[in-house]
Structures are given as C-alpha cells and as structure tokens.
Image 1 (cartoon, one colour):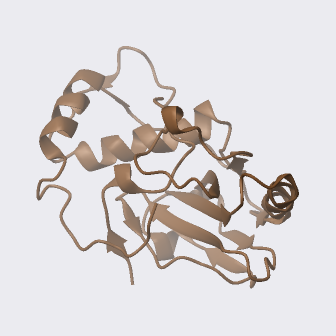
Image 2: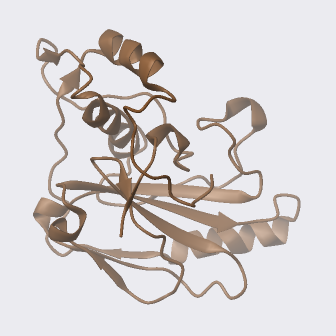
Amino acid sequence: MKFALPFTLIALSVITNAHGQVPANNVIPVTPSTFVRAETDLYFSAVALKNGGFGKLYFKRDVTPIDQQDVIRQNRDTLYGAGVFDLKAGPVTVTLPDAGKRFISMQIINENQYTWPAIYNSQPYTITRQQVGTRYVLLAFRILVDPNDPKDLQQARALQDAIKVEQPGGPGTFKVPKWDSASQKTKSGKSVGSSSFGGSSSNSST
C-alpha cells in the first residue's frame, strides 16, 4: 500500500533549494502536468547534491532551530536524516538498529511523491525499482531525542551511525532535468492546498 502526500509536508529537515547538474541552457518550463516531478527533483537534488546524501545517508545531528526550519512544523524532539538512491544500479537494503523503546523510523518516498508505510523494526528491508516504481527513491529517517539531555542526544546520534545501508551495485548516477525556477514557483503557489496534489494522505506526521 502506498499513499500520496504533498512533498512540502514530508519530514525532510535536510531540504534546501538545489537543482540537478545539467547544462545551463537546458531549462524546462514547469507545467501543471510536470509540477510533481519538478518538485521531486528539487527536493531530491537538495539531499543528493547539496547535502551529499546520494548513495549514502545524510543526518542532522541536532534538532533544527525554530528560526531555521526547512519544513513547516518540524518536531523539536526528533533527529532527521535522508538519502537518495539510484535503484537502476540495484536494490538497496536498509537495516535499522534496535532502538529499544525509543522511536525510530524509515520512510520511503518515490519520484511521484508516493510514500509507503514506515519501517520501524530492525529487520533488513530491501527496496527495489520494481517495488517503488521510479528510478530514484528517497529514504527519510526520524529518531526521537531529548534535546535537553546531552547523554540522550549522544545515544540518538549513535543510532544514526548504526543504520546500515547496502547497495552492491551502487551508487549509480544522479541526473535530473533543470526546471525553470520561475514557472515552478508560480505553479507551487497555485497548487498548495489544491486538488493537484490529490490522493489520500498518509498518517505520518512531521
């Protein structure tokens, strides 16, 4: 089962504005029919290129300051992380550590902005292109933490380091079109809250 949801509501604290590396003159206008993929490329590029999270994981080691939130309503008790993977290069297997009673999760998001039920257990979980339906996939991670307790923060960071990702054929390559930012911003403003995002909402929180 998978769910559709607005990308701007996904818990990706690692998001910043970035675009894929393509020739400067190869700019593609964003239309209602291409908006979803353009937004995906924007956010995937931020993780893969800006934050160095392509074929590996990128983590925020502290909770995000209130005045520097990249995604609205970010939790103040959560450490976030993400990685973008090229499934054309082969399947990706992720193993979460045993966090005991502490909340830890992995969210799977494809290029069409669909997400699957989150993974919470420490069993190896393999993600394939056939399963996801798109070449690239973004994996988002959340770990509960008490930001006021240095010892607890240290333990949460250790769990981040214990997440295992294996892709024997990877990392592959990351290539996306260069979308026209002006038309993309226009479409974004018109689409927020509209039926263009469509679909059912998942029950995952930020």
